Image (cartoon, rainbow, N blue to C red; front, side, top):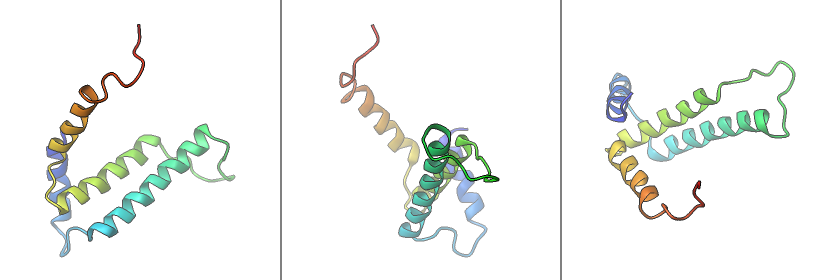
Length: 105
């Protein structure tokens, strides 16, 4: 799904509520919570901290998607064009950071 369309879909969903978006610090708290859930899954899957007996294993992709959803809410609430800023970020990788890491031969 294209990011612009995704942001519009999130905005359409949020628009049905009297207060469509929480305040920026509340959304940031949500992002932080979601990142913590992703960290928990990664730690259980690849790290030393195994899950408790009966504790559900969540898909990493779902946890990443929850973070992206919360970030889309933050961007929408602040009128941030996520596509534009992702492009800038990618451009930094190709320009500023292109020679920063050892490349394949």
